[in-house]
Image (cartoon, rainbow, N blue to C red; front, side):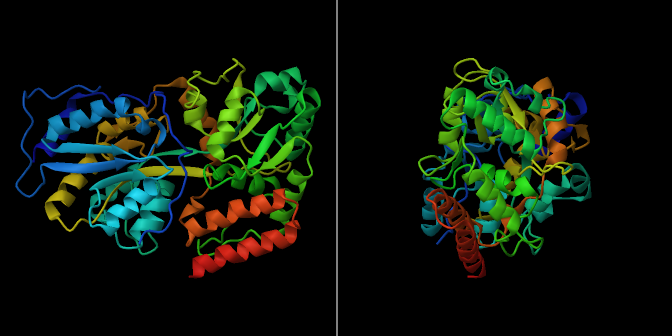
Length: 458
């Protein structure tokens, strides 16, 4: 078909562009999880080829605001290129995390699902996939793909029974950020290692104290208004004494440990750290940009390259202060384990073979061709592939290269595919709210872990 011929020609003649930094405007941190369900060059031809008889001539694609993919203007040139190359028209809809899950679940209930959706494994695999709504894409993953795709990303998109519900597209290691200008004013810059971007719990605590002594008020917030951006609070807490929050099989939650209880106790008693039930991750980022907070726990490469909500440019607050990214603090001698973010494309099982075939063309075009470099450009994250059809995929943005080289070695397992994840996330932020309200920490952790495991068992 024309797509395959076009890709072969382009792969033979075109240099792949690197991942460049583009701004994005997510309405909520990109790792939010759902409730359970009930300008590139154009081809030489002046007109697009008509799709094959067994391929639909139009598809609908729904996109959560993942990095720059939440910005229609940045995505449109690549979508137009796909249509020009394949003859398949694409009807795009941009979702918000506030109500996107409701829209998808309503569409599934009404037998009106889109053909393709972009988001992470906690939705595509652990929710819609295992509940029978997604197409198994295993036939799109050959031996070469398994060599080219980051194994952890491919694993995250695969269900326990080996079905691929998410074709990996891009990934990131989550981290935290500090207002470095404020840190220097407080005389605590010796605690910040700009070479390794790692620090100990002792250095972190000393920096919080210095900032609190200098500026007063809240230095950093353990935000817990909802699930938005909750990867930040999980990584802060589990890294403090080095523990896991799920078992290795991803079938149960393991919060009720001395490490978690001690971490929560330390943070609750630390001047300058506040458990804030009025903030979710996006709210925390906004207050950090404004200079109200001096640290942010909801952070990744997209925010560092361009603080999306503020539009301030690379690594700057609204007041012009310098932002530096850091790993979450660990005990002396321990290596940090940063939460991982993986996103990609999946196809809903509409029961229409022609639409499914067109959806697979779209997925291959974006995730397994030279076009995945441009798709990565848009995201501000890192491609899940080292190569695509034999062509190297690499970043041309020096800041992204730096971030990748410093943070990706600390990228941890993708535990968000644990059973009952949607319910467990609710238990997590409710637990933090009760800790912040002054409830007994050990009893609170035991209660909410039990709730999470009951949801997983159910």
